[in-house]
Image (tube, rainbow, N blue to C red; front, side):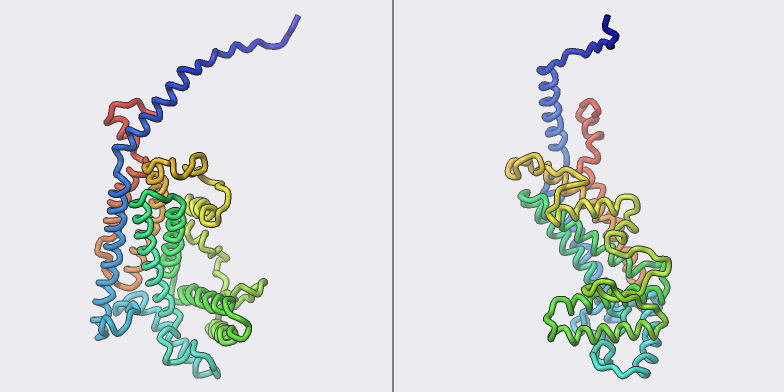
Length: 360
């Protein structure tokens, strides 16, 4: 007599299952039709990008006027009197005076004719690049939404927005004092100089390497311990006081704790044409030309959201650091985030309820 247990599995109703899948597909399309269109999402993102750009340029012009500088005489951002940025600049200028007097310098890195010889001023220039990079790529994401043709390109652009915003936040961090900000900006400056050398031939890189030596000398003279890299293509660094990791993916995690690192890694797999490890994209299981526009918009919007949250953090930090007015950009970003979250499908439950559909 057999002692094996008997399993009475219910008979699978293939027709009912197929009908359920078809009904689910029709419901998803109906719900998606009530979301903002790709063009509407694009317009919202484009208007936000224009607002950020115009707000920052308005402050740039006013800051120049306050210092008696014509707005066309320089495109450098000018911190307001009494701002944290101005205090940092003064702190480093004092260090520079002693360093230049005590060293026989041969490059233009610390020449009086170099407007960026102060690493804080150099860092303020990088803040301008961070904001402009984010705005430019927000326009790119909007154009992709408008066309309805792409899905991976706008995800790569969202990654760039995250990088730019994380860098801007890192430099303008309100918790950093003048010395810590010098460490951060000077590290980035040395990295930039090393990159310049890496992209040139041995003969052409000599000036860059000599300039890098003078940057290292200034860091040492300012009391920092400079660590030489293990690999020749990397730049020297001044380690963080607490040993924090400062690669850009960890900077993204700082402003998006709990989700920043995983989001950045997922977007990096797209940017580097690697197999997806964190998310499934519509063109992973469908031919690109057969994907509904709303499915593309849903995925693009879902990754635009963390990028915009990072931009909000950056704009608030940068304007506060420079002593500029933020023109309520942060409030507007929240409004746009709410709108885009509908396009990302994050509020489908409310739409289903409004349509009288059962919850999923």
